[in-house]
Image (cartoon, rainbow, N blue to C red; front, side):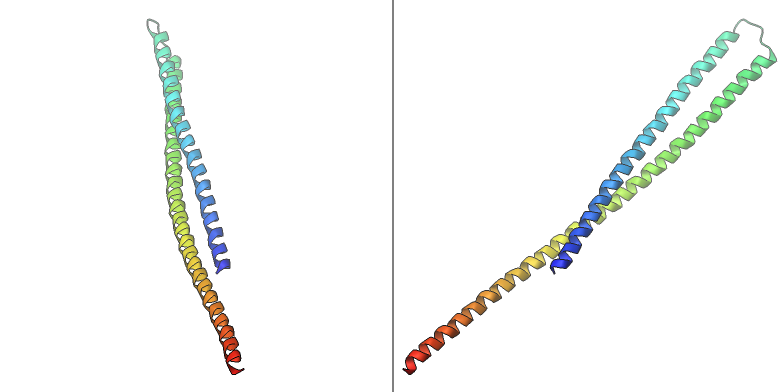
Length: 157
């Protein structure tokens, strides 16, 4: 029973370590999600400022087709970059959600291991109590037998 209890304690320890690992992974995933959201906000601010600057420079001037094409190209590039950053954010959110689900499963497993160990400890304690009572009863029986044989010997004389 002691060996089984040691195995239960080891399982509980492993389950607790899994919770710690999943918690760290979930925190990393949350940081990645925040970083992706920050990158989108920063990109949007830079793109808006660049577009406004480009349009401001064009006001009141004759604009060539080459200038318009360059401006259109930079706007398209900013749009592609924004789409890429949105995809990074979606991936980060999905990874964070997966980490949170894994963390929840690890926590449930750890709780189950805690309960199993506690139940086994109760059983071991009960068995120890029974064994102690048996030992006491056996000691009393041996004492009574020895005392009874002494009384019987004295009665014979």
